[in-house]
Image (tube, rainbow, N blue to C red; front, side, top):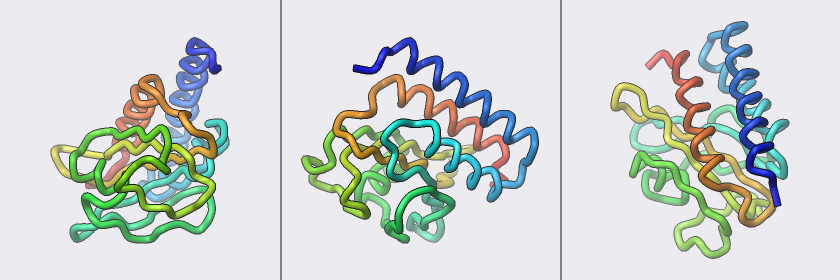
Length: 157
């Protein structure tokens, strides 16, 4: 079992590291690229950490770390599409039990998706998959929502 205090401390460090990356480089694409690498390195059991960006009614694969993945996801389809459509964070403890799950990588067992919304406009989603069932909880949600807020400070939209 993960110590909740340690988990919070690791997320606080992650936020500081991302802030440092933004201070060093504020280009949107570079920020998303380094952000996905930072998440992939920092979060245990991660098999995918990246972004799907909203364009013309669908989510299109953006910067990520992981194996080859789905490139286009329609709103409402899969966890990413659901999160984008509802504009709310979704946590799926076991993807094999989620009726609307799209399998892009068989190694993914749990998932958290955080919508990226700026000035009321859907920009995309942050998608993180774990190789373990039950990885994500309310602490992950709270800190990853803060993480997305930080990322959106350099969003040109």
